[in-house]
Length: 328
Image (tube, rainbow, N blue to C red):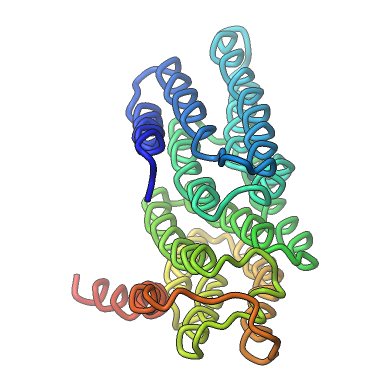
């Protein structure tokens, strides 16, 4: 149960993002981002936990620096060329959302957070920067470099991780690449991808939170009953975009859009780079199902029904989405 002060900060967090998204001036956008930042810090902190304090300080320093550069760019934009100001604006927004190569802070901050705060950081905190990206003239070549870097770096650095929080952080960076490609070529697809990604991530992180899992060995030795563990493991395949799971649906739409635009090499590159994070998704799934270790933690049985509903929805949702598109 959230404490009253955290409910207040959660409300102002949402309000800050909505102010940024709906503002008609750059000063309003900057102010909304600052309200969002100042509301996120108390949500990240937990009493008697030095790791969350360290993570919140790292997050504040990076976000405050990015906000300072954004404000400077807004104030001096008239003295710069459109290309320079666009590059600086994009760099600030990529830093705020944690896209590579501006991702250096993201896995470290995630590794010190609770699963609830981590979910907010992986989903809601990306909303405002990505919507703001739609307001500025994007430099296609620069954005494609960011997309490639995000997908490549997340796959390479995520393979050897044993911390579940860092694995989910690098997974999030990989999905940023897909969402940026949706913004670049078809903005309407971005919302579909964001919602599907948020649903699957919520299902996975909710189960991690209720099982108190933070390391891969805990996941392998989990005492969740077999059907729940099977559904939960398949969620990682859905997150990787394997058909016929829900995670395949938005990637399918983006691939279709890219190929229709004649961007065959870009499509091929994105598909190949997606195989890297898919490897550690499959490793997690198979390890939890095949390897048998002593029970390290106990899944809360009272949550079993809700866990099943979340997992089934995020896995089989592709069927419903296909029906919706067929009957439109």
